Image 1 (tube, rainbow, N blue to C red):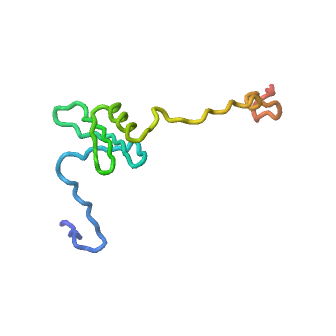
Image 2: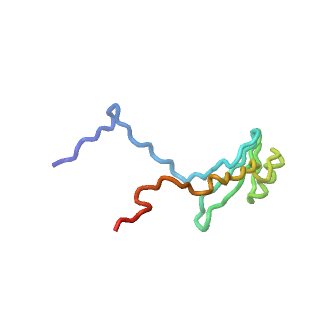
Image 3: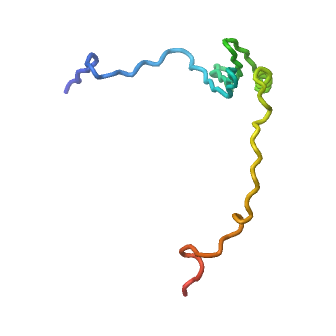
Length: 117
């Protein structure tokens, strides 16, 4: 029983690409975009002596970037550039119809109602 020959040069057989060596890539999440201004949450990988990863916030506008360590500072700068409101403004919810709140009298569901003895 010998080894099977490998098919490294065969067409149609693809080998997985090797992962690049080095530190892990940073995690980036786009939080908001208004009028071409972007607010990003960036999580840098942990160093050897770190307990938690370093988190930064980035505001991008037309090729320029401003980095912040605190989220409220990045949000204020983003608001200054875009005029974004402090809260998401939604229309007020209409009141519920009282007729929908009372239980219906009529047909009973199977298994409910009279008990047979």
